[in-house]
Length: 313
Image 1: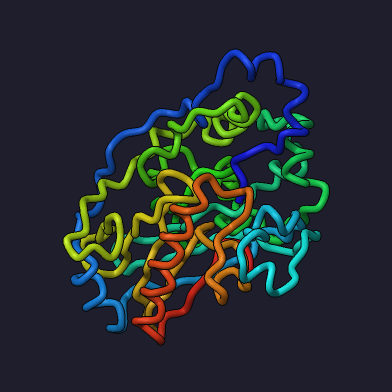
Image 2: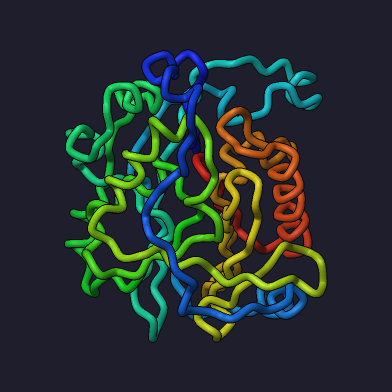
């Protein structure tokens, strides 16, 4: 969702913001030790074949936030539909992938119980809590208890991006678990990050460096890069920048067919169905719109593909 704080919320740090800006996170990063770049043609040749990975999507929390953040209400289609800003119900997900030899992985992390109940313990102050609308969040399934109920340990975490609502379960991730994300997620600089960076760093505290996917150019030009995560054509990381610099979607081959985990390239069902990018929660709307168009085209080429969006089903 959002990595930004509206202007009205910056009053408390205005003096500092005038003079300086800071990176989104100071957490260490390193190149990925997993996966190999491939072309979209190679990926798509395999997508419709039954795969070995089972995928379960868990609703970790229910949430209500302004629609104007989730959807570009200035888009001609949104205007034609008469859409106005309002409180919009949504969910926070974690996606559990079970690979026959690589074990249990999650894409995004849901929420940790401490994130909602005691946010100040994670360095989330009143300003960030207010702008996240934490009072409108209800936890359903925290990551820690869910992990404790599984028969196998967590082997790794793949992130779609580094916004708070996608890493809010990181306090429940066992230390030493490798965590992967797209390139450039920690580096953007902005005055708003004076407020956010401490919270991001606190959620990642105690974990090793983020391992950045090593995307290479797609010779077929369908995407900005694709990585075959396990080298067996079962899970693909797809570079789709725009919402954030390193936004990453994941295509998973399951026994029942392909599943596309879009991340926050599209938050809402209406946005996906109508090809309308997110609103002010996104970093680069034109680039986000381009990436969204590419993902929708991929899904259209594979009609059996199940699409799971950032925050709605």
